[in-house]
Length: 196
Ligand code: ZN
Image 1 (cartoon, protein in one colour):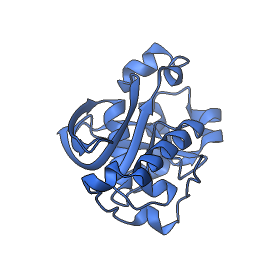
Image 2 (image 1 turned 60 degrees about the vertical axis):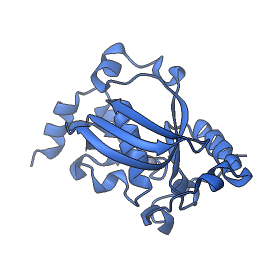
Image 3 (image 1 turned 45 degrees about the vertical axis):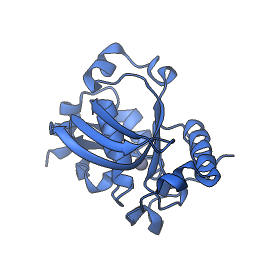
């Protein structure tokens, strides 16, 4: 079943989500929720979905960047973003630390801010300690686009949205991004949008 993705302004998006116990993680309720979040993320489509985005204030997110999302992107764009396919997985009760502060700047969007995008600076490399869907401890080391996805999703679990971190003058509709900025380099877009 596909779940409803809440939009910015919904109070749950601004709350710190609560931790899940190992017993809860293994429960039918949470296992079903994970399955439904997977379906919802794929249908959106998106590369990550945090529980607060479907109205549940829980420290849980699903992530997947499947090969078919990358196949139409130029190699240059993938290389620049350090973006590669990521299999489906679940992060629960994550603790994030920065390994390489960067920052790296790219346009980023969010399923809870439907139709918009902005340039968001992010750390280039992170380490995440979390539990998986079997409540087993996992350590993830990520860089590039995967590190960006992890930062974006874990922010959601603490009530933070990309607009809190964006370069505010680069905020725009996806239509205008496609019309004016998608074919330009990030440095060019940053310079043009920040010129006064
Ligand atoms: Zn988001």
